Image (cartoon, rainbow, N blue to C red; front, side, top):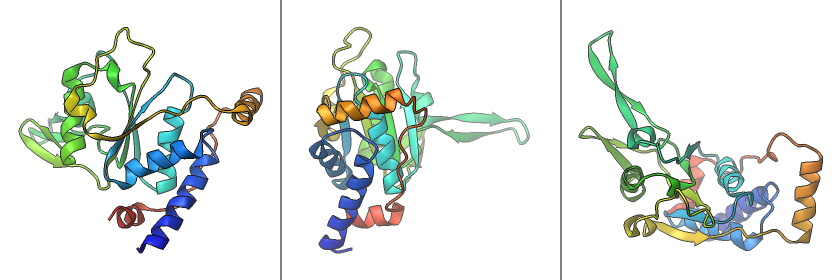
Length: 213
């Protein structure tokens, strides 16, 4: 895929995502930059601005598998990476994949989990693999994390270590919508739309790999 084709594909993805996410185009372009640079994205903003919808919409438009992990104070590393489960039928242990095994992983409110659980995500972000009980498992390709955190809620949170912050290529915020955006949000609320705005697939996994290469 040449530069012109890649640019056109990215524009189509951004157009599709912007049809669902009420946000500034520059913000969506910054998220797209993180995806294309083989990095990860940290969204830091107040609640209710569409961080989760942004991650899900990008995954759908890119044609990639999506997984959401809600980080909480009692979340264990094995809840993220997976664990070995005993199989009574043949008296052996079989690895059960955790939610980290997806192309796009939404780490929601990442700073609510304790450091040990955050560290379980670090290897995945840096190496594209996880290690459980001494065995290493490759993650799907492409793989990237879109993490969210709410800066105003300091109580019950754990600051991200520097090593993990370094894994994020882009740190950005959605910000509050403009007047037209607020009107659109009110329209959706007034219409009591139960489902998130639909997003169509623009690319597939192979095309995303080509764009990133």
